[in-house]
Amino acid sequence: MVPTSDDDGNGPNPLGLERKCLTNNVFLLGSLVFVVYNLINSFEMTFPNATYPPLLRQLTLQKDLFPIVLSPWNPTRLSPNMAKLWFTSNANDQKYEVPTDIEWIKKYGGLAANGGVRYLTNRTWIEARGKQGNCASALHVFNWIMKQVIEKNGLLMLAYGELIHIHREKDFVDKQGKFFDDDIDLWASPETVAHVATLERQLNSKFGWTMRCFIHDGKVVLVQIVATCGHRLSGVGKSVSSQPGIEVYPIYTIPRQGSGTQYDVVRDFWQGTRLPEPVMFPAKEMTLKSRGLKEPLDLQIPNQPLKLMECLYGNWKVPSKKHASIGKVC
Image (tube, rainbow, N blue to C red; front, side, top):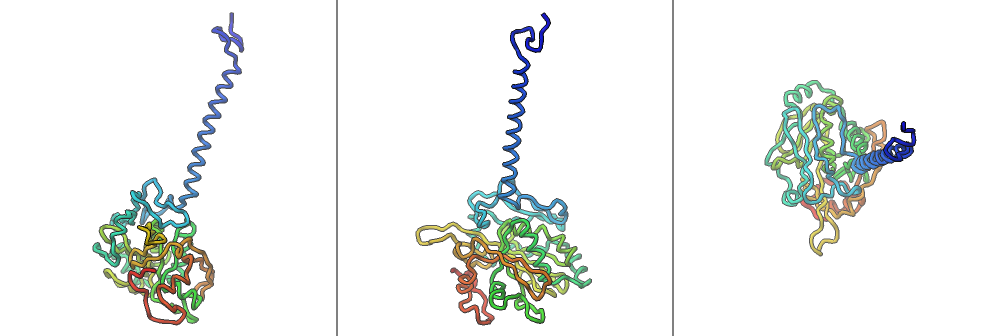
């Protein structure tokens, strides 16, 4: 007997069953795709800094698949056995590691750079570009960097003197456009330190600025962003150029130890300043209309800036040349 659509000659095998099996397989495959899509989407939303612009050639950020950050509202909180975070510079093919080893971080005493200073751009280019002149202003460069960081949901907060000036003078510059301070101090999460390093090539081409890293035990402990105009190539110390420099201080949250500490401690890696976590996080956003810029400047500041400034400076409302004490504990 010739099999019909309802009989294959080997017992009942209706075509409807084949369709049902096919439908089930398609459903399972669709469910798997849905689950994978949502996992990927969840990863990108939770860790927006996991990917970086593909066109960067000067510097390439390289990172293990596993995320560095555990707490989205405090991206400086690390845990034991974190993945390494590092970037490489094509200027010298050097690998630079941003510290994520919490035990090493605890032991580092600050203000030390046994590996000296490494420029991320060829020194010959820096000198040649500096002689051309016409470097962008510090505020324009800072504004551009903040836009890149905010776009990636990074953390780059105002620190030290800049906190005072936006609260006391309501600006970074006076009526003549002169800076109140000789640099712009910023606190950054480890991922943001690495992200900012990937901007080096664009800082070169767009603004005539360069970047240098202070190295200790092969790890980046401080980043200085400087204009090539008027810059003197130098070692460890404050940079000199035609514009105030931008200093990026990595910060980390150290878990509290014992019953004597009420809060986890946020530590400025280079300066050694220690601050209670609630004073710093979650960070706040604000917009500043500066005399030095035509467009508003989007900023990030600590959660309790007034309390922070009172601890670091005392009466910060009165102009003074006093600097925050090294290793200050609040």
